Every structure is written in structure tokens, then in C-alpha cells.
Amino acid sequence: MHEMGIVLHLAETLNETAKEQRLTRIGSVTLQVGEVSGIMTDYFIDCWNYFKPRHPVLADSELRLETIPAVTWCDGCGRTYETVKYGRECPYCKSGETWLLSGNECIIKEIEAESEDGEEGESSFETEDLN
Ligand SMILES: [Zn+2]
Picture 1: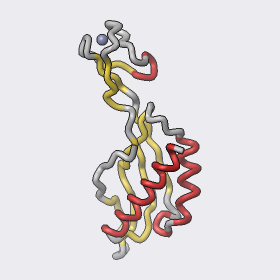
Picture 2: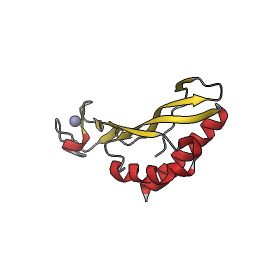
Picture 3: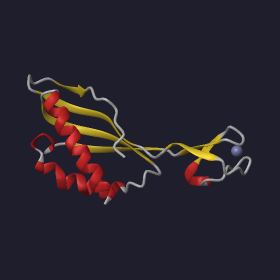
Picture 4: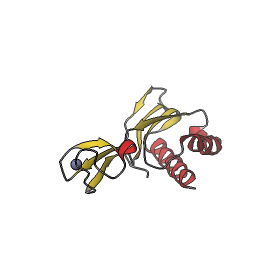
């Protein structure tokens, strides 16, 4: 139930942001999801659709997901490579001393919202990794 937990946290975070910034309606939320974060996007959207009617500020919102490619850094030769294609072993020097650089995140990138004074626009938001 990984996705459900993240969606719950996301909904809470958005509710708090809406309160702080006096937003009346959130139009869209763009989320960056890492390729190897383990999040199933279809299921994630199902969870989102289940939760959003419970929060008036989110009721009409649209969830957009962007995938962040997974990249691994190799300590052996100092190069980077595609994680999904090659796994943990460096394709250049066959070293196993490798570290995931990106691809495990789940980050709110931006929110489009309307505020109490009727202004529409992008809401400023401090980037937070929900994972
Ligand atoms: Zn290497």
C-alpha cells in the first residue's frame, strides 16, 4: 500500500498549503515520480481519485505525473549510466560500487490554484520528497 500512503501524505500537504496560501481551489498538481521509486502510476491515480472528493479544495483537481529517469553513478570509473537498463553493475567497468543518483523520488513540482481574491496562478511551493 505504498501508493495509498503517499497519496494520503500528498492530500494532507496540499490541504495545508491551501490553508496557508488561502487557496480556494487547486486546479492541477504536477508530481515528479522516479522511474525506480516503486510507485505504480495507474494505481497511484486510482488512489488519488478515491481521495480527492473528500477534500473540497482538491475536488476538481487534475493530477499530472512526470517520470524522472533513473541514473546511477559509478564509483569505479566516475561515469553515470541508465539504471533500468544496466542495474547495479556498471556497463563500462563492471564495478558494483554504484549509487543511485536519481529515480527514487516523488516530488511535488508545481500546483496551479485559485486564491481567495480570485487570482489564478501557480502557487509557490517548497519542494518536498514524499517518498
Ligand atoms: Zn564504472
